[in-house]
Amino acid sequence: MPSSSAENKTKVLYGDHIGREGKLRVGCSAIVPDAAREKVLLTRRSDNGLFCLPGGMIDPGESASEACEREMLEETGLRVRVVKLVGVYSDPNKLTVYPDGNKAHVIVLCFEVEPVGGTLGLSGETTEAAFVPVGEAVQMDLFHGHTGHIRDWMENEDRAFVR
Amino acid sequence: MTQILFGDRIGKEGKIRLGCVAVLLDEKREKALITRRRDTGQWCLPSGGLEPGESVSEACAREVWEETGLKVRIIRMTSIFSGPDRLVIYEDGNKFQVISLNFEVEKVGGELGLSDETTEAGFFSPAEIEALDVFPHHRQFILDTMKGQDAVFIR
Image (cartoon, rainbow over all chains, first blue to last red; front, side):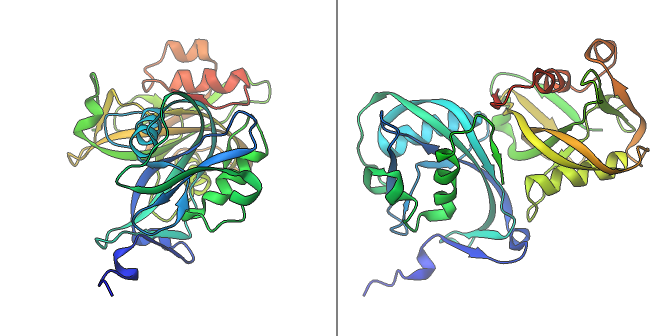
């Protein structure tokens, strides 16, 4: 048995305003629909084995949409451009705990994006990448509540959800 | 006193911080509530940094309450301003690239007043605001809100 167990995986804890115990971090997630808008791209994280939407943290010196486009390229090989903001997700009752022990209240900006180039592939952070029918995707145990982002996207609203 | 520097990708020199900015319009949607800051003498929209353990709605309502005495709730998000070319330096020397999430809010209670941080508060039109010393981009946030577009402006 490898020594890596639950302690070495990124985890999400829930509790009343538990976000207070972490530092604030700002990330983005990306919804890449297929042409028929019936499937969305999911990747499987190498660190905890969970499926999720592609995405990551915003680095200083870049905009939120640039971060989204960079993460997409790094994780999936696809070049994308941002179409719209689906929502902002700021649940204070959620704490992300990283393998190094760092804790964060992660605020996520979810964007719908469209591919403009590149080829779908894997990276060091991902072990699978596939377009999954949205009906199946929302039944999966996706990392960090990404199911909620997909449900909101399915509403097809122009307005962004504020959560 | 808080300083704001501008330069190509200068945000790299700081940490990422998230701010919430509230735009409260009058009934005719012609004027927006702004306050005058005690520390810099500049005018600005009610706004502030998000703290760990609060949602954007909670942060927005808290900042408006602290700075104006009004109780508000978010109607919609109007724009994101990521500001990679802007560096905010606080009095304690900490440097941040502040990503602003901008919201239209509506009043649900309270009375407009001043706080320790503000010396004046009132509703002004974009034309009137042009003549004031206003925080960079805040006039744009008001104009974005007055456009009444559903989709969020991504800036």
